[in-house]
Amino acid sequence: MNQNEIMGMVFSGLVNQSIEYQNSKHTNLPDDQQEAIDKMLKAIHDFCENKAIIKPEYQADAFAASVLKVAAELGWNAGR
Image (cartoon, rainbow, N blue to C red; front, side, top):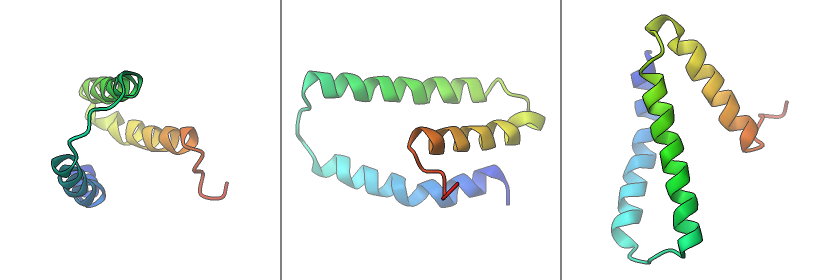
């Protein structure tokens, strides 16, 4: 299974849920909350932009490091 297939399995359900959620929600967020979300989205953009620079032979290393970093930042370390 390649990286695109894994990403499809992981994210397709989340993407569909997120689309439904955004379509049903019409609330304006407080400015500080919108600013925090905008910063998160910018970080994701930067992540994707930099991923494109990484050579194919190093992308598995980058992907694993990214998953572990997100898990560590969220305090989810699978019991380790």
